[in-house]
Image 1 (tube, protein in one colour):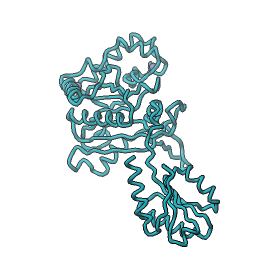
Image 2: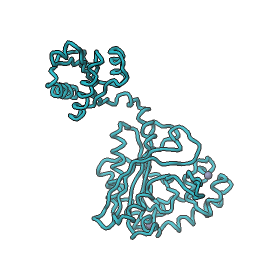
Image 3: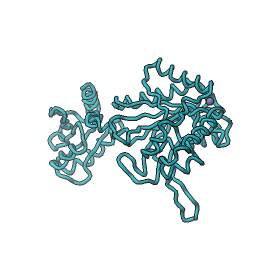
Image 4: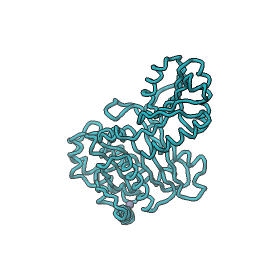
Amino acid sequence: MYTFTDRGDRSLTLRPEMTASVVRAFIEHNLGGQSLPVKLYYFGNMFRYERPQAGRYREFWQLGVESLGSPEPAADAEVITLAVKYIQDTGIQKATLLLGSMGDEQCRPAFIRGLVDDLSSRSELLCDDCRPRLEFNPLRVFDCKNPGCRAALVDAPKMVDHLCAECNDHFDQVKRLLDDVGVVYQVDPMLVRGFDYYTRTTFELTSDELGAQNALGGGGRYDRLVADYGGKPTPAVGFALGVERLLLAVEALGEGDNIEKPYTGVYIAVVEDDARSLAFKLATELRSAGFSVELDHMARSLRAQMKSTDRLGASTVVVIGPDELSKGEVTVRNLADGTESAVALADLAGHLGAVRNDNKKV
Ligand SMILES: [Zn+2]
Ligand SMILES: [Zn+2]
């Protein structure tokens, strides 16, 4: 985590994720007092202190949802389906949904004892980070990418094979609901999250476009977290997606270039300086009418103003020239097709509105 001491000698940590913050807000503002489940989303920057690498930065953005209040498998399936749909909507088609279960307080302790016994018998395979984990947090070994640790886990017991009847039934229902709506998944027995507060469903979304650093995001059920933070016991499920990862995957598809540029901005250019106050007045009026408008504030020549239209991506230029002005008109040039027309000042907003609608149809 990104932890430092401030000038008042206080230890501060920049938030590494949002679920804990959402749970804190849920308790502090008594959101559980309303009709459940409470469905929340967030989009924000997070921080971690580690060596930056492709798609992993010290400041990164996450978007996520949390559904608090329901223990039902349908809540898990709803949240998972939303994550899958969101990724598909970005254009990423080759994403894989990995699904697992962490069990609960009924079946997990016995599983962990079995896991520790098993891994202890092959502890020479484990890396220096993981050997102490056997004592403090053995599930974290599943997060380790070290080849020795991966090898040690191949024959180790898996949580999905040691679920109690209730957890097994819950897991089966989540899978059946996903089958019903055509969401494709792979059960991954190695998919275990290293935090104690996770219970039952866990999932991860990966992209084939991203190589080794292929996780787009993930989530799961965390039925104990609200109570751990001092709230009334409240089952919950949610996910977070890494925004930089999503952007990398979309870029890898080459889709980034195809994203439609919705800008339909208007640039107001003046031929002579004495038209600048009129340009400002027109810009203000058009902005009030809902247009995105730019104009020159740098006393540039007409030629330089026309160059700016390109840089700004304007779709239309309104030219105020001395001849037109004497007739109460301006010249409107459609940059998409190069056509020009003389438009009375009084009709300008209506004319630009029609042009904007035409462009939308294209
Ligand atoms: Zn390890
Ligand atoms: Zn269980």
